[in-house]
Image (cartoon, rainbow, N blue to C red; front, side, top):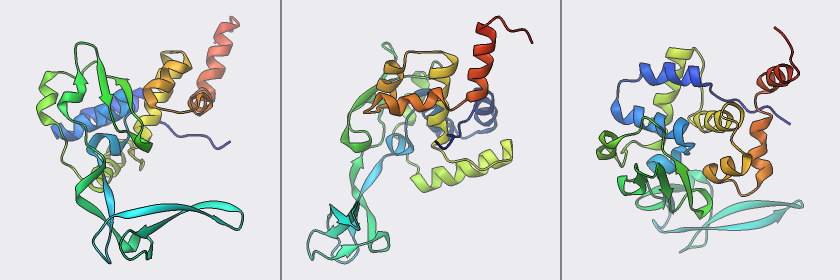
Length: 220
């Protein structure tokens, strides 16, 4: 199994301190502190066809024995690839996070439509407070947010990272550092299968070996 890359708490602190834009800092906080995907923070718009400027529908077809996804224009039925589609300016597949979805008293963030159309509830980061709520929704395009994150990690950590690595950092921290039961981590991350969440028990083998050594009364 390919090892999953994650960002450590110390690395997150460095980039969080280095970032000065308040909305960008909030996006970082939601990614690492709540395990939210970039599309769940700033939203993901529906596809529209360039040919007819209308909705796109998806089919799953068998190709050489493998099931693949194909996109089609709902008006002219033309098969489309990403060069023939554009993101809608008005229709959301996943809406951006808004302040009414955050309950600071119960420490909950409610995602009514997350990836795959599912809903879930996750935890608020401890340093998320009322001053952050007027910043929502964060009006930054997904690509812009990713590009800014690329530049930030290169400048501060000298390595290019995907914004999604913050979500992996959340999973690693909850499972390996805080040692929360995997079903709790599964619920917060919105995984359908527990074995998907289980990847975070294998994401940091050096940490696991250190813990096993200490449990066996090993000495440094």
